[in-house]
Length: 462
Ligand code: FAD
Ligand code: MLT
Ligand code: ZN
Image (cartoon, rainbow, N blue to C red):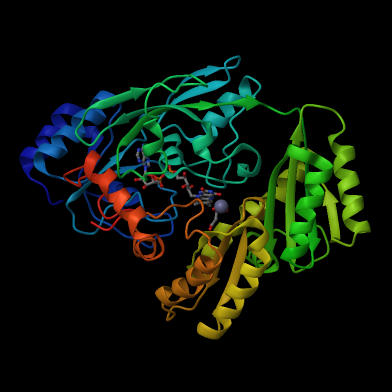
C-alpha cells in the first residue's frame, strides 16, 4: 500500500471497510492478469455497490491525484485491467455491481450492471426466449462492463457483430466524477453525438461503465454444429463461401482450428476430434427458428465432399454432441497456456488474404525465429486469427511480435482484432497506427481525462 491514511479513510468511510481491500491474499486476484504476464501491486482495491459510490471514488481519487484501474472479471488478454507494480494505483472492481436490472422480451433489450457476469446475462435473456449473442470462452467470468469496455468479439461476430453493435445505452462515470446517464432503450437515437461509442472499446481509459442496455435477438429454435477437416486455409475459405451459399445468413460461427491447436487440446484437455485428422479444422454453427436447417447443413456437407473441399466431417446429432465439438474450440486458449510460454497475436487481415497471411507469417517466423511453433486458430469468418507463437523461455517476444506484425501491416491488417491494446500492445499500436490517428486518440484522452488518472499506461503510452 502506497497511499495516505487520510485518502484511505475517505474511501472506507464512504464504502465501508469490507469494500476496501488494502492487504493480504485477497488482493492477489485483482493484482495479476489472466495470463500472469503483468503482475501489479494495487495501492488498494475498492468494490463499490452503486453508481453513486463509483462517482464518489472517482472524485476522491481525482482530488488526491491517485490513478484508478477499472476491473471487471479480469479475463482480458492484454493486461488492461491490472495496476502497474508501483503500489500507487487503485483497482476499482465492479464485481459487486452484478445485477440484471431488466429484461424486456418484447422490446428485446437487457439492462445489466457492469459487474454482471456475461453468462448470467445470457441466461437471463434465454429464460425469456431471447438471445444475447456475445459468446466467448471466458463468458463464465467476463463481465458486461469488461465486454463493453473491451468491445469484445467472440464466436458470433460473423452474424451479430462485435459488442458495439449490440449496445443501445450506457451509464458511465466520467474521469471528473460526474455521471453520464445514457441508459436509453432506443433503436434509433440521432439526437446529437452518439457519445457512448467513445467508451465502447476504450479499455477503461476514458470512463467507467457502470451499467449497459444491450440489444437482444430472438433465440433460434434450431441449431446445427458441424466439424470438418480441410487441407489448408484456402480450402477453409472455399468452405465459407459454400456454407454461405447453402446456409445464408444463418451461419453464426465459422471458426478455424489448426492441427497444432487440436494437438494441444488433446494433450492438455484430453479431448479429441471425432473425425480424421487433417492439417486444419473448421467448426461451423448455424441457427434458425425456421425448419430445414439440418437438411441445409447436410446439403452443405455433401457439397463440400463432392467438391473436394472437405476431407472429413461430422454434424452433431444432439445438443450434447454439439457441446463436445465446441469444447474442442473452447479449450484451445487454456491448453495453450498449459503448454508453456506463448507470444499472442490477435490479428485481422482482409478475409481473402488469410491464407496468404498464414503462409507469409509462417515463412517469416521460420527465417527470423527458428524453432518456434505456431498455434493458429480463431474467427476465420471475421478474418481474425489468433496467431499465437509457442516459444521457449529464452525467446524475445518483441522479435516475434515484430515479425508477425510486419506481415500483418503488409496486408493492411490490424494488430488487435478483438482483445485490445491494454498494456501488452501499447508499443505496437504506436508503431503501426498512423500519427494522425494517434494524435486524435490523445486529443480525446486529454479532453476527457486531462489529469491522466484513468487507467494510465493502457492503450496509449502516458
Ligand atoms: P477485464 O479483463 O476485467 O477488463 C478488460 C478491460 O476493460 C480493461 O482495460 C479494464 O480496465 C476495462 N474494464 C473492465 N470493466 C470496466 C468497466 N466497468 N468500465 C470501464 N472499463 C472497464 N475476447 C474476445 O474479444 N473474444 C474472445 O473470443 C475471447 N476469448 C477469450 C477466451 C479466454 C479463455 C479468455 C481468458 C479471454 C478471452 N477473451 C476474448 C478476452 C476477454 O474475455 C474479453 O476481453 C472480456 O471482454 C473481458 O471482460 P472482463 O470483465 O474480464 O474485463
Ligand atoms: C479465443 O477466441 O478463444 C480467444 O480470443 C483467443 C486467444 O486465446 O488468443
Ligand atoms: Zn477470439
